[in-house]
Image (cartoon, rainbow over all chains, first blue to last red; front, side, top):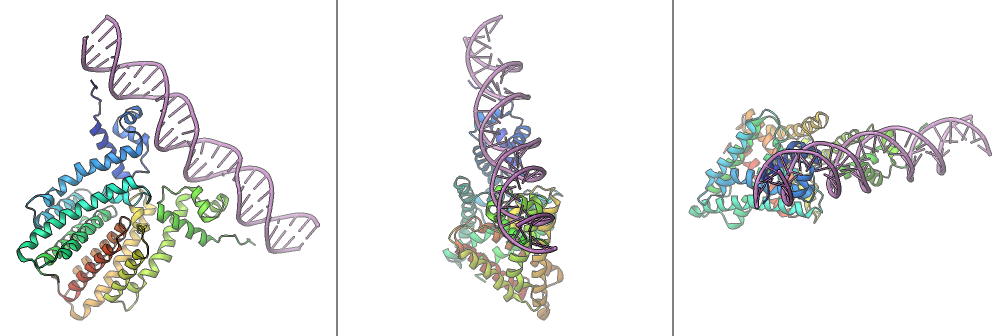
Length: 202
Length: 202
DNA sequence: AAGGTACTGGAACGATCGTTCTTATACAAG
DNA sequence: CTTGTATAAGAACGATCGTTCCAGTACCTT
């Protein structure tokens, strides 16, 4: 029977996730991970075959512990535009909670620093984007059922637009300490979505 | 009198810029730079004190050779909303020219992989953002003079919004090969700007 | 108490990193 | 041609990288 480690496997991944998220995959060394996770080199390599394997686990864990909780309102069965508003509000208030520049979105950060051939990582980033798009699309589709002013193609476009805008919001959160700016962005985006869904195709 | 090098200093920077842009600062090694620039190690270190110094020169060069030409319409003295449309069109058609994922924006890529304390690099990224914002703000201000429907604060917000949106567009161009999606995003953004400037505050 | 298991801490490995230095070569000036 | 200089090519340096390995130890089971 396996003995309980001082750090459980998920706690190990959580610590590694924090390091990768804040500092970036290539900058974080195994020595850093040993120090920040509190798990020895042997311990890490007994659970993961190499650094990239651990990072992939972190990407998966990121979906569970970061994306799912905050995106859950949008993915709820009865979610409407207010769910998207709530989602954006959660993001913005998270930015406002700190005076320092944010650490952005792990997925967006990773996208900027992987090589094009890195298919394993890239697949996970695609999954993330499709998850966001699908969530938004379902909401728009539901909101559109009453009026029916938008075509399916319009809804697809709007979902893609929202996904890219959110990625931009996350990305830029790494650059600024001015949360008010991010809040303004979210509000403008939100008003655009409302206008599109309830105010016709503009 | 100094002898002409086989590669001039600007050609060196251009080659290094291409490598940093496509692959990322941390992944590109000095050996890579020697191979791709065609300049020896000694030659590189005679012009730049270290790798970061060369990278800073690349960031500056990026402004000159990439940002300035494509952003020039927006910064023109008589630029209007059509200049922004032209700017977005230039970006999108650049994406459409290739079947592979894009390499994004060097500034946005760098932002995702530097440490928060890296003030020298961060200062250049801030300058870039302010440059974009200022260009957009001037256009909106000019377009607004006739009707005067927008307050100065509205114009500032809209300029920030546009800058972040453009950063998002660039960022996501690294993720997808679907240029149509990016074109759709640009068109939606453009219609929003037109509505805000000429159609009231929504 | 004894044995086995699972982890720690750290030494050690080869590879590669950024950087420096040396040697040889190609060209300009006299 | 000779001399001087700037560059090229690459050896070499210490540091650090990811990874492996080993001895010591704490804990569970019997």
